[in-house]
Length: 616
Image 1 (cartoon, rainbow, N blue to C red):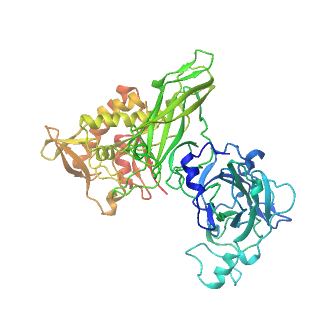
Image 2 (cartoon, one colour; image 1 turned 90 degrees about the vertical axis):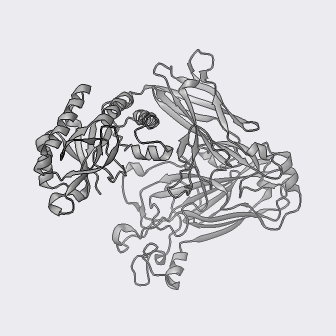
Image 3 (cartoon, rainbow, N blue to C red; image 1 turned 135 degrees about the vertical axis):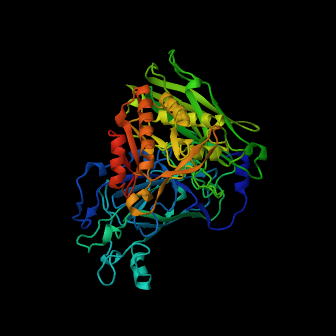
C-alpha cells in the first residue's frame, strides 16, 4: 500500500539500503501538543490536595479519539521536542497532563523489524501506537484521568543536602551532588513498538504524560523560583534497523506541501514544516456578522534532487473567488477577503528574527516556509451560515495546490470597533513608518502610510491617540508633531499644521479617542531636580523646514503664554470635532513623576487634563 502523501520518487529512494539504527522520530520531529491544566497538587500521589479551587485552572483532556490515526489535531500547538524539557525549572506547576502526538509514514511492505522507542521524561508516561497502549511507567493501572498523578519523586529531587530548595539555574550550586539530585527528576523508558501494529500511511505515536504531586512543607524560596514542573518530555527517539518501508519525520520532506495551522500558532523554522503525514484539512475560520476572522495555511517548498528547483523558487500568490453558502444566495465577495503573506521581522542590525510576524501584501521572492493568512471581513448584513470557497496557491511555475476554505458566520452581530468595551492602547510610531519605508517624514508618501496604519488601528478599536510635542522622547521620535514657529526674538507660537491633518485622519479611520495624550514631559524634566533647564521641541520656519529647538523649562515666566496658546489651540480643535475636553491627557509620567510646579502650571492652562503614566 502506498501513502497518498508520498511521491513515487520518495518510495524509490527509500527502498535502497540505509545505515543501521536510523531515526524515524526524534527531536527534529514536529509534535502536536495538548495541555490539560489543574491547580498544583500538594502532598503525595495518595493524598494530594489542590493548591487552589480556581475554576480557571480546570481544563479537559483531549477527546478519546486523539490516540488514533485520522484524528484532526491541526488546532493543537505544534512544537519540536523537548516539550517542557530540561529539569522543569521556571515552568508552570499547573500543567497536569501533556498529551502529545507524532506522525510517521509506512509504505508497503513496511519495516522488516520492530521499532525502538527511547524516552527521557518527567512525571509518568503512557505510550500508545495507533491507539493501542504499548507501555506505561510511573503511572497506576486503570483509566487515566486529568487528576491521575504519577509516582512521587523523592525528597532529594526538590532539596539541597542542607534541606533547602534547589534553586533555578544561575541561583544554585553547580556540583556533582546537586547535579545528581537534579538527574532524579529525569525518568527513562525504552520500549519496543511492534511492527504488527503499524499500518500503511499515517501512523501515530502518542504519549500521555502526567505530573507528580509536589511535596508539602518544603522550605520557602524567594519568589517561588525554585518551583519546577513535574511533567515534561525531555528527549525522545524512535529508531529502526533500516528505513526500508518507513517515512522518517526528523527533517522536512522534499517537495511541495500545504497544511493548515492554528492561527494562534507561532510559525518558526523549527515547526514550519508541520506534521508531514496528515492530509490537507480545510482552512476553518469563524467570525460574527460585522466581524473579522482569520486563518493561516503554511506552504512548504523544500528543494531536493528529485524536485525541480523552479517549483520551490520565486514568490507565491494566493487567490480566492469569494465564499458562498451552498444552495443559497448568501455570498461574501472576494473584496471582503484579504490575503497576506507572513514574514519574519528584521532587526536594526539586519538580523532576521526566527518567527513569522509581519503580514505583507506580497510574498518573499523565495522561502521554504511561507505562512499565508486569509482574513475575512464579514459584511454587516451577511446571513449566518456555513460559507465555502477555495484558496488557490500558485508559484512561479504554476499551481502549488488548492485549500478548501470553510467560514462559519455566527448570528451574533459584532458592534463597530469604536463601541468595543476592550481597551486597546497601541502606540503608532510615525518615525518608524518613515524609517522602514524610506520616505521623508510628513511627505505625501508618508501620509499615505500613516493613513494605512490608522486604518489598522481603527479595525482593532484603538482607544488612545498620542501627540508628540517634545522631540527625541522615549518613543524615539526625531521631532514633535506639534511644532513652534518663531514670531519674533524669543517669541514662539505653536504650529498645528501636522496635528490638524493627523487628527482629521484619526477621526476618519479610528474615531474619537478615549484619551488623547500630549507627550510633553519626560522624567528628566523635573525643574527641582536640576537635570533640565529647557524643553526640547521642534522649530519650523516659513518654508516648512524643521530644526532642533528648545524653550525655557516649564514654569519659566518667559514661556507661560506659550502653553496657554497651546491648550487654547487644542481646545479649539476638540470643539471643532465635537470631542470632549476631558479626553486630553498630559504625559508621559513614568517611575518618576512630574513635580508640583509642572503639575500646577498645566492645571492652570488645562484644568480638565489628567496625567498619563507608564510605570512598573
